[in-house]
Amino acid sequence: MADLPLAETARRLIRRTRAAVLATSLPAAGTDLGTGPGMPFASLVTQAPAPDLAPLLWLSLLARHTQNLDRDPRCSLLVAGPPVSPNPQTAPRVTLIGTAARAADPALLARWHALNPYAAPYAGLTDFSLWRLSITAAHVVGGFAAAAELNPTRLVPDQAAVAALAKVEPEILAHCNSEHAAAIDAIAGAAGGAGTGWRVVAVDPDGCDLVRGEAVLRIDFAAPVRSAGGVHTQLICLARGARESLAKSAVSRAAAG
Image (cartoon, rainbow, N blue to C red):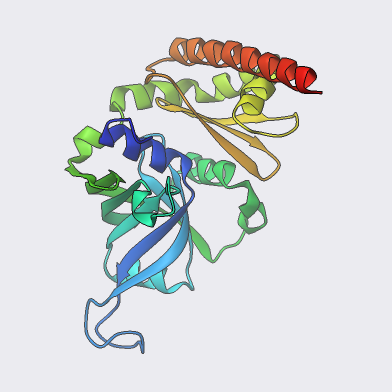
């Protein structure tokens, strides 16, 4: 991602990264963790981006960060990728600043669980709730000495495209998984996914997400799309490229053996 514009680096990081650090504010009293009101409290959470890129969080009502958000919805979320050298400062990362609120949309809850299949046992727990972070600002670091502050309008995808794809996403998923299973497996294989039986579980203007068991693969499109036709075109290109890549790998292994 080092060669991408910083806004695209940030978007791809948010789309593909699940672990994040959530910073909330402690209350003025009633806790032994701080010495005064508003002391920052950072905790590890699991996020999944909504189609419009807003991070979704499935939080326990018993967790300190949830209690903090109930009192003060202002927060920030750090999402980081792996460093490209032993220097940890070469890791691309983005800090999202905004406010969090509970989200009652069943589609968003289904999306969070689809992108975090390990959490299936928690799906029915009543002491968890879904939260959505509304982004008001972002600070992105693409690596060492590459940083910028981004207005949300530079970061988030086109909202008309988000809405258009949301209407047809169920049909896209059903068609891909029932009619093009082999192509989806090829795309997954070329992206490092093992085995067969991969399914497309989410689509957005920037790409799609594939799942097999508890394994999740993020597949980026070459360019943002705005319609089902755009998704179809991108998947055809990805499948063709994947089959060519896998065929070359097979030839190389045969020659080496």
